Length: 206
Image 1: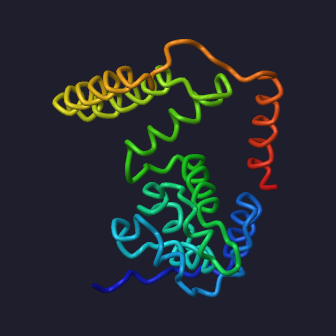
Image 2: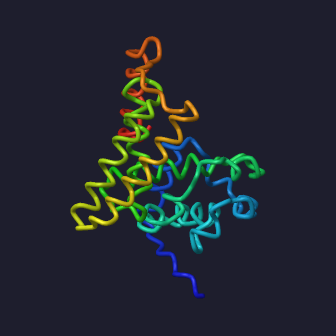
Image 3: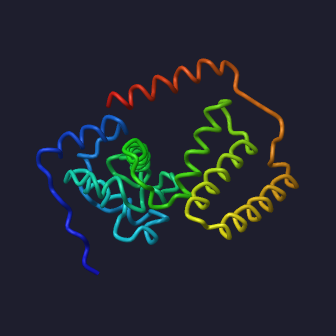
């Protein structure tokens, strides 16, 4: 299968590279395409031609559109295998997380809406109390999924997903993995202040 040709835009390349490097805090210019990250990626076979090394190559060539919209950005499981295998200690998972945030900031449609809903729900629930509450997390996730399916008139999908998650919730409850009480970290205000500062740094491209 022929791979799509990467678009090279000289004017925007350096700005894009600097933005990704500063936000992810990873020196992607140190990548020399040894492909050890690709060999260890557990989702590499599910992302088509886009593997961690290929994604870095897109960034280095200034192909912003392809870098922000590909399956690896939404299928990455953040196992950090790529980083542990990299001879230059480049944590590609952090780069992917940065690209995911940039994609959301530019309001691009996610290739995998359920993954996007999971990511957003997890961050919202975790930021609310400083630790994850399963009830809140699953509730937010189901609402986002149901809304997406509703506007596309997928009523059967809403029913199937609701039943699936209800069974999952029941199994988690039986195994005492569903916490109904509200638990939050100490000094929650300090955590929220750090999160606010991190968001500002990301918005400023620091």
